[in-house]
Length: 241
Image 1 (tube, rainbow, N blue to C red):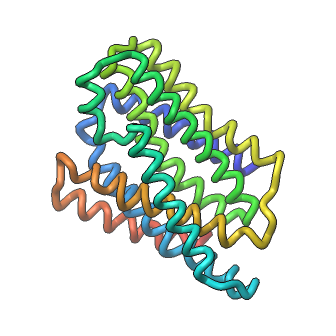
Image 2 (image 1 turned 30 degrees about the vertical axis):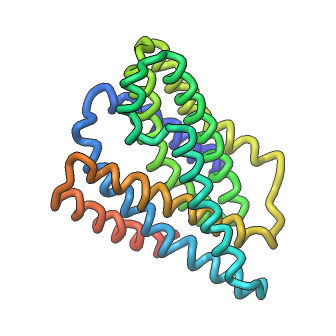
């Protein structure tokens, strides 16, 4: 049940991100600077220690989850670049301005959000602490997904009403993903591999996706400071999870 509740948090985050795209986008860099610090901090202070604990408990070779960490990092990097759904590619879409381009990009984001929900559900299969950490990361990331969904729809000459419908689809996808995990479980021996994969995903969206975007147009001492605050926040939160 906790996975569904937090997946609903991802729904709200995605929807608010879409609304933010319509009103206060010039302030997004401050939020992104903070969330990038939170995501990287969660990897360092929660997921990696949990991986090391499981590796020692199961007497596994530590290189195996590190391989899946790199697979997770590269998989999401390749997926975003090949599908052209990264925020930095908006200028390319603006040149073409085809409604179907915005629609296909928004649908790709919805598929990505579905996998985010699966990640939340699988995190709770490990334990509540990991599930909460994964959910925090997904909720933070889904804010930008909502923003990108609306932006890509509108910049490609789709109507506001159509953009809002795709935003609702993207927002609901994590809930469906979390629900799907009630149909299967991860074998205990695979948990370090899963956590390694998800740690790679978090590192990518935190350090290689959100953080560069935060500084792409509004780099400032305040944004840097908020990233440091985000790391400290992650450290404090993980002491109680």
